[in-house]
Length: 250
Length: 103
Image 1 (cartoon, chains in turn brown, blue):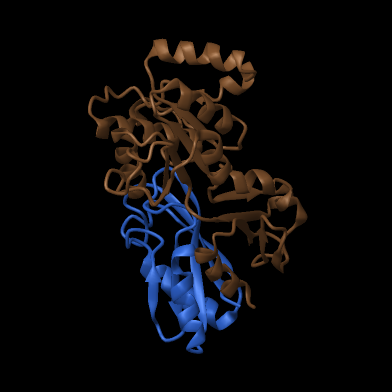
Image 2 (image 1 turned 45 degrees about the vertical axis):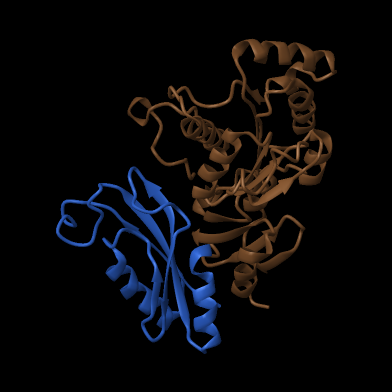
């Protein structure tokens, strides 16, 4: 199978990988696809470009690498869209899923309470998982392209859900709740054996400070924070940002 | 390049040669993110884009040349004094476009 035919397959197979192309310098035109599974197709790309494969595949972005000697290698990322997993089938969960669908992401909602977790209440969820937090997180297996948001407002669900999410590779772990709830949750998770380092990963209360009032505004605030975390940005106004507008590519 | 792969495969299955042009670097402002591609077939079919339409016609000319030579090349577009009325980007950005034959 040709390299391009294999690439076309990736759009539907859901496999993750990186396509390296030498665009300047020695060996211009060299092209090699490296998949997370270890499969390689093509060739002619300096090994130096692939040293940071793990990091490149995790970042989920295209970029240009400058190697020693003036060679430049373009990195194109392949993989399924990011996933957002919301535990707690509350109103905000539906709003969050609806907003995430706009970005083309895959949406999953979990809740142990079947009365809350219905397709009628969560029409924008691609998948519903009716399970207790630990089992729901285990079934979903969050990876480095998964954001987890915990929204039940009930300690007996929120805490195990957060604990399980923190044990995963999820790139974002967020929890709704007042500052008081956040403080109480923190104390209880510490008691439950979660380390300070792990706790620092929790974005709680989650969302950017945009004065969100309605469910929909709250969803936008949370989703904007998720995108910012994925891009390694703080989320402030562009007018006040000294960085370039688009995510750095080199 | 992902967005044009299905179309490129269809052209190739129909026996056409294909050249793909991809935005690989942007400086300052730019109309399309890196990784966006324009594909051109031997018979002149096109799909995708590399800008908002500002440099496409020039890229297509280069693509046809690459179709003949079989050799990939890197193009750069930006606004300079000489180029202000020629091919360039009105937004004031610069883009590098890699043009390559599909093997």
